[in-house]
Each structure stands twice: as structure tokens, then as C-alpha cells.
Amino acid sequence: MLKKIINFKKSTSFIAGIILLCILFILIFGASIISPLDPVEQNAAERLQKPSLEHPLGTDRFGRDILTRTLYGGQNTLISSVVALSVALLIGLFVGLVAGLFHGTLLDAVLMRIIDVLLAFPFMVLAMIVAGLFGTSLFHLLIVVAAVWWVSFARLARSIALQVKSETSFAAAQILGASHLTLILKELLPKAAGPVLVFATFELGTLILSISALSFLGLGSQPPSPEWGSMLADGRDHFMQTPHILLGPSLFVILTVLAFNLIGEGLRDRLDPYEKFE
Amino acid sequence: MLLIFSRKILEALLTLGLATSILFILIRLAPGDPVAIMIGQSSDVASSNTERYEQKLLELRSEFGLNQTIFQQYFIWMKQLILFDLGDSIHTGRSVMTEIADRLPATILLSVAALFIQIVLGILLGVLSALKFGRFFDHLTRFLCVLFASTPGFVIGLVLLSTFAVTFSTYEINTEAKLSRLWLPALTLGMIGAPQWIRTIRANMLTEFGQPYISSAVSRGLKYRRIVEHAFKNTLLPIVTMTGLSLTTLISGAVVIESIFSWPGIGKYALDSILLKDYPVIQGYALLMIALVIVIHLVIEIVYSFIDPRIHRKGEENVKKDY
Image 1 (cartoon, helix red, strand yellow):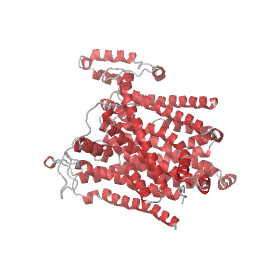
Image 2 (cartoon, rainbow over the protein chains, first blue to last red):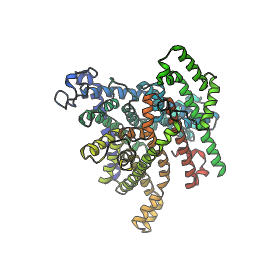
Image 3 (cartoon, each protein chain N blue to C red):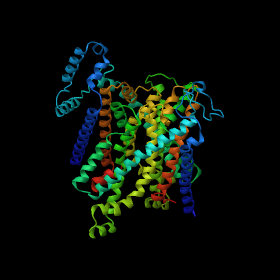
Image 4 (cartoon, rainbow over the protein chains, first blue to last red):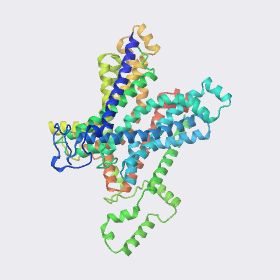
């Protein structure tokens, strides 16, 4: 009985996350249908307006509709973070599984050393260094993401690979003469893919938070292109007088990250049975 | 024991060397001539005739050793690092070391205060939530954790700032690092990090509750409080790791909060320097952060092996997997 309730509760957070994400996706990618307004065009006559029927979330200091900009901004944020994280995920899976397969060899040692070195660069710090040296742009930021974010995936994939290697099915495949590539694709990858994907869902939320924080500081996406963090940075100077400017973008960041976290939470509870306590 | 420590320290030094080398490569790959940028700042030379400009350019190049091969430059650079010579700020002309040393205490004060808030919130709510497992309080705490973990730090910061500085006017807005100005940024940073603490402590408590020694304590009729104390003691180990890791995130993540509350720490300084293209400062900040992370990781490993001697027997593999 208790188990059923717990299971139900687990799936509620997962289902809530999926529903929330679907609604956000429809809103964000249907932006051009929902709003006929232009996200970039300025309109000096309508600057800093309070929320009204015409502008549900008001207008910013250039007279642009905040709802429209928030929706279009979501496209930028979501697409760029998903692409960057996917690249990191692929690198991480590959490096991690290879390191796991060749555990104990020089290759593994070298890969682990590279990971240790990269761990010495916190993401925020490296993003700041790159922005300072190479200039501030969203593209630079995404390269940094791909360059360092794979490390956590690689460590996870490696530890799973090491576990799988001790199973009999793996030994059987090895005895049957499977090549390294077959071992990785057929034996290690199917077992590592699940946990790594769950982890990636959480990481996507974290990444969106980091990207918006960096854009907020002026180190990511540059105006006039709409992006949640840079919109918030834009509204920061006026927020004491017109706090509604910050409402739209911050609400969307929170809801999007919340959706990913809920999905991740639901998935993790299913895969990781640490809560057997009754 | 001593052998393991010296090996760990050597490894950390190797990592430090490699990480700084990556930084050197990044600096050299950066577009733009650093010397030209430096001259550009002092307008007296830039505005005068081109011949003098070229001459000054060459002078400065040889002064900084930029006319040597990349390997010679690398060794000069490394030698300066070992001597803690980080150069001078282009903007103020003061040494980067003093500039950073001036601002470091503010950041450390903020981070330690935030860490304290995180630990208190984490232990309090984490243990309570585990004790009330499955009840309303537990669900509420879990939901709030997910919600706060999904909220950008700067949103929390801006909301708190507008509440306390504008609505109640109990918080003064200036750029001083006074103790009376510490509580709000510290509270913000604390709230950002607290969900992770609460979650970890709750999960660890629940794992401990499932252990046989708790069942045996219950069957022996031990007092409720004693049982909770026993379980809590065993959750302390992960707290060591989390303290170290949180400290890293706090110090590097303080940038946003320092910027919102105009707290004069190194994060805000680095940010301002990025916008001013003050390369020596950016380099100094990067080196400081890298060294800090490596030292913290090293300390965690050493402290860990003191607290939990099993780690030596299990071998290195498990030490790495734990965090």
C-alpha cells in the first residue's frame, strides 16, 4: 500500500514536469503565432508601460513587448543550451566509456588527468576568463559549456562502465571476441545511457541557470537579441520603479528549470532506489 | 600515510601546473596585441606620431619578453607565477596582487557567512524533513527545495534587495563591505545553496534509518533522541565533502551576488575588469580561482582520509567516486 503511494508520488513530479515542459514548449516555439509583435523592433512611444491587455507583461525601456521578447528569448536559451549540452553529453559518454573500458591502462590515466585538470576550472570562472580574453558572446559561452561540461558525464559513464565490466555478460562478450567498438556500443552504452540521460536533465536546468546568470552579468547573449538573462540585466536599472519588467523573464526561467528538475527528480527516484525506507 | 599525502600533494601540484598551462595557452590565443592595448590606455603615446608609437611598442614587447619564442615566454611566465608576480593592473597601475588582496577578505567573509547559513538550514530542515518522512512537512520542504533550486540567484537577490532596500528601507545601498551590509547578500547566497544541503542531509538520514543498527537500537528501546543522534553522526562524513565543494561554488558563484549588492569582493572586481579588458587582473583572478579549487580538493581528500580510515583500504578508486 505504502509503496503504491510512494510510486504515485514519484510519478506525479515526473508527470507535472512533463506537462509543464510541454506547455512551455508550445508557448515558446509558438511565439510567432501567439504574438504578432516584433521582439526586436523599438517603439519609443510605448516605453516602460505597465501590464495591459495589449501588453500582458508590459513593455521594456525601448517600448518592446516583454511577453513577445520573453517567448522569443526562450527559443534562444533552450536551443543553445540543448545543443551545447548534447555536445558535452556525447563527448562525456565517449570519453567515460573509453576510459572505463581501458581501465588501468595509460589511456585511462591520461583521460583521468585531463578530467582532474578541467575540474580545477569552475564553469563560471572559465566562462568569465573566456569572455574577458575573447570577448563577450553567447557563442563563446556555448563553446565553454561543451569544453568543460562533459567532465561530469565522463565520470559518471566511467563509473558505470567499471561496474558493467564486472558482470558476466560483459565477460561473455569479451570471450566471444567482441571488438572494442562492439563492447562499447553493445555492452557499455545501453547500461550507461539511462543514468547519464537522467543526469543530463538536471544538468540542463543548471546550465540554463548558469547561462542566464552570465547573460545577466553581460557576459553571454548580447542585446538586442532577446535572452532571459540579458532581458533581466536590461530591466535591472529600472526595476526599483517598474518591477514588472523582471516578472516575465524570471518567471519563465524558473518554470523551465523547474520543469527539468521535476522530470529529473521523477526519473532519478525510479532509477535510484535509495528511498526503500518505509 | 605520509606516502599517500605526499603523493596527493604531488598530484595536486601537477594538476596546478597543467591548469596554469591551459591558462597560458588561452591568454596567448586571445585576439589582440596586449601591448597595443596597454599603450591604448595611456593616451599620451597613442595620440602622438606613429614612429614613437612603433618604438614604444617594440620597447614594451622586449620588456615583457614578447619578442622571444613561445617556450621562453612560457618559462618567464611560470617563473613570475612562482614568485607570485602577477603584474600590474592596466586600469589603475597598481599591482594585481595588492588589488586582489584588498578585496579577498570581503569575498571570504561573504562566503563563510553564506556557508554557515547553508549548513544551519541544511541540517535543520534536512533532519526534520527526514524525521517527518512522507508527511506534509516533508513534501513542503522537498517542493520548496526544488523551487529554490530552480530559481536563478540573481532573481532571489533582486527580490530581497527590492524588499529590504526599497519597501522597508532597512538595507543601505552603497559599496562598502560593512558587517551591517553583510546579512542580505549572505542570506541570498545561503538560500541559493541551501536546497542541495537539505536534500543531501535528508537522503543520508533516510539511508541511515534503513540500516540494521537503527533497528537494533529501536528494539533495545533506546530513546528517540539518541537514535536520531546516532544516525546524524553518520551523515557527517558527506558534509565534509559538501563543505569543500560548496566553498568553491560560493567563491566563484559570488560574482552575481556581489554585483547585485555592490559588495566589493574579488568577483565584482573581476567582472569590472572583464568589461574594462584589464588582462592582468583577469589572469590574476583566474590563477587565484584555479589554485583555490585545487587546494580545496586536496584538503577534502586529506581530511576525508583522517575521518574515514576505510578509504586507504578501499584504494584510490573510491576516494574519487565519492564526490
